Length: 410
Image (cartoon, rainbow, N blue to C red; front, side, top):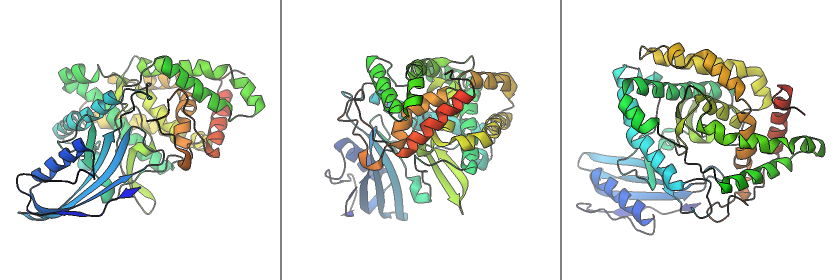
């Protein structure tokens, strides 16, 4: 972690100057523009670049606080930045430029459309789908947002099993996100056809993807005892081959999907241990696909077998009923646009997507904090993960679960 001492600037008029040693040049220019637009006459800037210890792989993260005086008086703005990393040579399984363009679209265009739709439906503030505000200087190389951590929001640790309360609030937000996609199709058909229906996930399903999944498969197998390893050796590759099919469209009903809906990408505020608000972030893997994928991805990225045994039925019912209620604001019938029967059918047919997620992305979630790989230097085809023992437990119990449910025949 690198922390810079405050830097003071006086008499800001036509030009603000942030020390170029603090920030990358292009980001430096963007922050300068923000300072000028905010009307500072003098200000103090504090900058911190920080490491998420496995929470982010596609960007350098910064917190920037600007405190000073404008003609209206004392003013402070808090900025969070995710700045693009240049590692296309090694990270061949994903287009980083496309991921940043997707997220820029989310914050600069989708944010406005979502707000317009919710205004038109007169949805109370407490019932709305929420997004973090961005600055106009947000671009395809730097996602520049309001730093809601300064308002008490935080993320859950990526290895933790979430509480039922957290899961309920998160899935209500996910249901609203999906519902707004169905609303856009009806209320903004041209925008939907041109911008949503054409949106593809920035993952690249090439030979490098095959090498990457083989590497993840090998890592997963090495976490199993000999008996289970023998059973899974021929099954894992078949499962992983399903991933592109599921992502590229496995349902008659598709919508805008978040693509990476998990606690590390959700800002949470709680009081006395009770979650009172959630704001999803990180839209880099957003795409047009099956809403069931987002639901399964969330469930299997942050719950364990015990929680699923106790609450899975409740959580899927809550997700769907939340969508029903939200669509009522727009005088839309969920049964017409996305029936419960369709949801249940696709969920049952593709539930093994959950095990696939644990195999492919589990190592990212459970990598030891002191051994996080540098994907800007290491090829994803050969990248090495040293995972916490929690990964072995989560993997084994998930396999046992799918054997019990009949999705895996041993």
